[in-house]
Image (tube, rainbow, N blue to C red):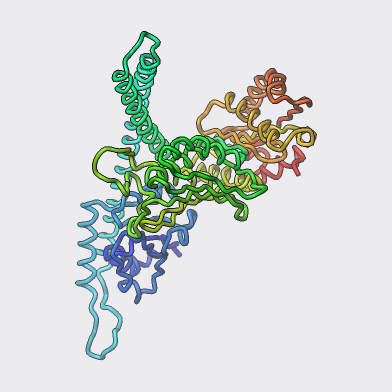
Length: 531
């Protein structure tokens, strides 16, 4: 018996419902579900008689291993990009030609399906011209595949173009800013007040343009999968206190009360400190921009299960209910007023969403017009780093298999054997700094972009080397050990440690030492005696 192709249709509109009805009658295809998105006029009644499931989110239904094709029919670019990122290689999108083919298929089905009305009951439809229908569906699939390939190529070219142009602009902008700053600081001679005011305007414009370029670079890296997180143990309270200090003066200039409310014993989080600062900078920058004078902005953090929830609330202008679903879309801006004033790219919230999701978290908003907004996001606690590291490696390994690449996967474990003694002699915050310092040093000796360095637990740092055989893993480990050993004394001095760092190394590999990630991690913990 031939296994049916599992199909998911995104878009519960007339087009999606009609396509579901067609594919439903094909014995080689199983329509697993139709996903409604809120961007289309729903036609749920078209699907009612067929018994096809209608769901609110593809997360409920799409299993990467069991769905063969996802057909996106809303025409919404943001939905397609999200799907393409989450389940790359299985997503198709309709174009003009495809739409015409689909219309022909629909017409053919409606003309050949006859319903008897004489008895008052529906009876079996007359035999359909299966051969013609199958040919039309095959043509439809071929066109979808072609359009999908073209779109991927265009998307790749666009990301590369944005990245190249942005990089080329950053250097001259840096030179311009430095030159203007030198003149404004009177390094080359006195200037009058009017000249200084003009130079300050130039500096502000350069900074604004630099932010736009950085946003474009971030979005192109995210879309191309080149944005890599430098995960470490992050002190949540320090992260929030630093951002409050950074924006304190700006909030004060608008007479806005800016405060933080942190729970006692707030756990550390597992993430990229710089990228999390970027998220908070975007959220607080927007809050200050859209909160009137004498308003209030509050940052709160609390523990929620295996994660920490961070919220930024304001008493600003708020966002309408209709606009809330589009808040995290690219190039979306709300609450802009005509005339002079601060302007952005409409990319900040989209970038924030992508960064949070790369951390394995999620972000959401609640808002009411003229009362304010609350942006909240969750990031895994550092205590959950064991499961997070395993998930990251499993996703990477599964991607290798799916792309048909050789299943060589090496893992280096670098363990600080006397971490318990260091913990007993240092504050908890300082032990996190020890791990971060060693991890940062190791990153300098790992050359490939696809390699990952991340803290694990009990003083262990993992170096993940996809598509690397055991001999290659051992070569990287030797390079790390040869370069790290002479630096240990300097690290101990900079960290003000009264205990010498005892560092051990182990190299493991799939398929040499285990068949899968779970087996690899079990062996790592056994060899390094990780509790």
